[in-house]
Length: 96
Image 1 (cartoon, one colour):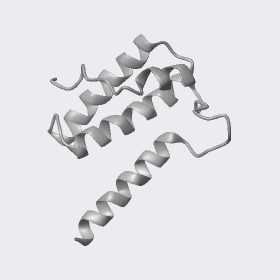
Image 2 (cartoon, one colour):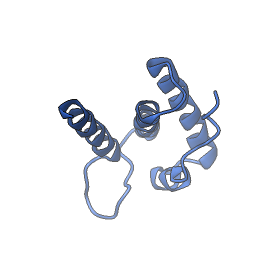
Image 3 (cartoon, rainbow, N blue to C red):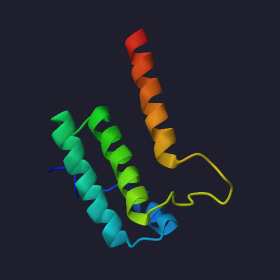
């Protein structure tokens, strides 16, 4: 898995906000990229990376048993926003 070691730079921040160790976050990232590779059949590209990030955020939320507080103010789930952005980009791509 070529990209599994290239964890996003935001990974430590997400780990801290979720209250998990960076080591656990890295394990969850590796699982997410593995699932993304299996589902997309790719190891690069926007579809692969978008799904990897989406799966990573969902795995973090599952691990902590609740939605991590990414902000000091109430906000929608970060994974929901990522998923929504992905859907909108696909919709826009279909219009072209």
